[in-house]
Length: 286
Image (cartoon, rainbow, N blue to C red; front, top):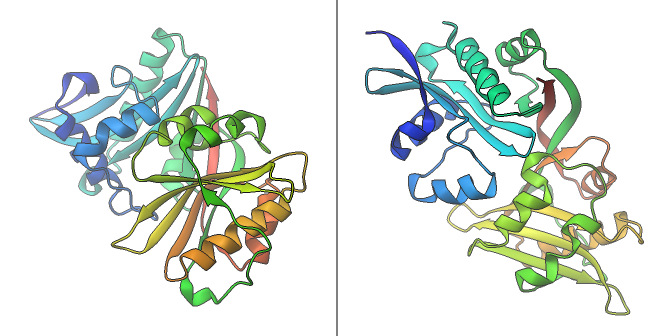
């Protein structure tokens, strides 16, 4: 039975989800997608199944290339194979197919993120002309990391529309795809996401947090955070993270894809967060 590459939009969603989960369940940061929520991610990440591909053998998925698109910029959300099918050239076929499809669609630039310890993936991308743009840090803090002092100011939960105006205005570094305002605006529509706004002594907004709670596992993912560029980002950043600890002391806290040049990294270090994973943002010009 031969292997073939199938356009993702011609396949059932359950097949795409099975390919994604099989390919990424054993990665350094295991990624799993649940079929009922696939369309939420599809909208938030601007996934385009007409540009995505799945490697198939009969009715079984062996791997996939899942792609998002915003204008002439595409993003590879995930390219991977099931463990038993790695090292057989399937990734090369998927990436070559993806580039061909993207060129035909008028895409000029492709970006992706890869774990800095994933040598086979790094080699594959380098061979196909990708260059490294910058390092991205995943920050984590657990209850075992100890208490934090009470903050002088605290953020409060607010309606999504109160945070939305600051997504573009308060960018302190160029964000990755998962932290671009287009993505964050979609997250604000999710029922399990909590927007929080910090105000200064005069009542003016000075910072925001966007939180995703996993109560069964006592985990909080910071989907995004930023501060008014007119103030020192370190102060509101510190106050928001201290308040988050005060409100949820029994929870672990995680934030993905903070660029290494971000001034927020100084805040995470000062509050005893640690880097749990390092990724490289890579780019190819088609």
